[in-house]
Image (tube, rainbow, N blue to C red; front, side, top):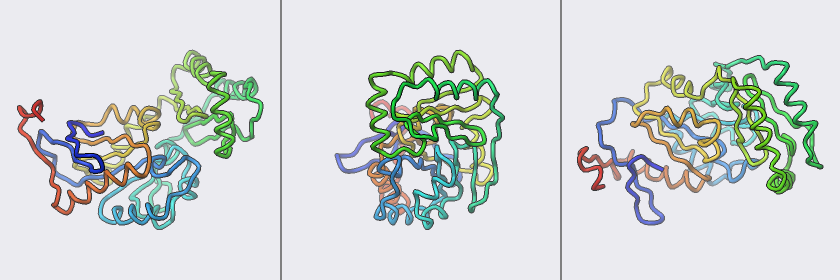
Amino acid sequence: MFPQAVFAPIGQVSGPVITQALPQGEDVFLFDLEGLLSNTLSHMDYSFADYLREFLDERKCYLLSRNNFNDACSRLPSSVLRRFAGVFASCGTELWVDQQLVDCHDHAFSDDLYEFVVNVVRKSAFYERTPPLVDQGAACLRICLAGVRASAAEQRKYELWEKKAQELPEIVREFQFRFPKYAIYQDTATSLLILPDSFSLVSIREQIETHQKPARLISYLHLNTAQGFAKPLCDALPRTDVLSKIAGPSDVSQLLSYEVRRMSGRDPLIRLPENAREEA
């Protein structure tokens, strides 16, 4: 998970080995909403919310959500949500601060693209589609052929069907051929996400820097997010930043336990000379 990581025994989390001096400033944390929930349709566990709330009081933290801001509000306790310095909603195309929209990337999708999406929905062979099947943000489109608001059981039914039908990869291939100025991701097992090339998630770090110059951006991103729509951000992070790919709240708890020890001075960062990197 960490660059040049030193791993502790099972059940413990160790911090990264830093082979160069850190830049001056304060560490800023970016949490992926999907990684804070036990599943994509659930609400935050109360005990985990208590643990996270304490950490949010100690550090500048931002939230990244692939869904809209209202969805984030419905899944997190308000006492947790308001402690974030900002929320990057709708795949980072919107920035909300103190419940107010302060930045938004707008994009007018073409009629041809909408026609393609309509045909995708119309041609799908899945037999239990539950409208609505498309969710739209200011600069993003999500197609979920199980239904945007499908239950976990309904999504699982589509996922099992899709493994045999292989409908989504065919949609992706056709879209990439017809619309090269857009990016399309399979952001979950049941949905596709479309973003214009006029928007890049790299802007998230730039927006954070306009509010506060971080020494490092420490990101905890779900594997689906890191390999999907947030991949441009992950690829562009400087070496001083830390990216951890997580599966759920238990991973976040372990990683934050290290950060809490480090902030208290009980578990400081290990710095090795550059020529000792291979030995580590």
